[in-house]
Image (cartoon, rainbow, N blue to C red; front, top):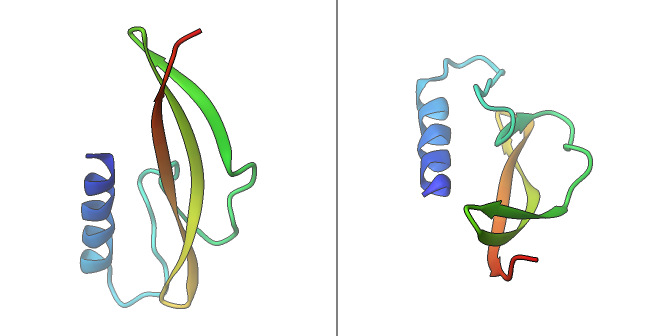
Length: 82
């Protein structure tokens, strides 16, 4: 579901942007322009109401109007809570 929302947001940004060479994101946690985000890949355990998930986050490099564009990817796997 989050990926679908992200893809819709990216489509809206690219469709609604002018012909300028700048792109902005309202959520820098999922989309960044410029340098590669530091400290990735990272893995952590997320515990929501006793349901634990191992989350691995990485960034995928793309480009938009000759700029480096980074989009976050998450892989999730159910794990036993400790």
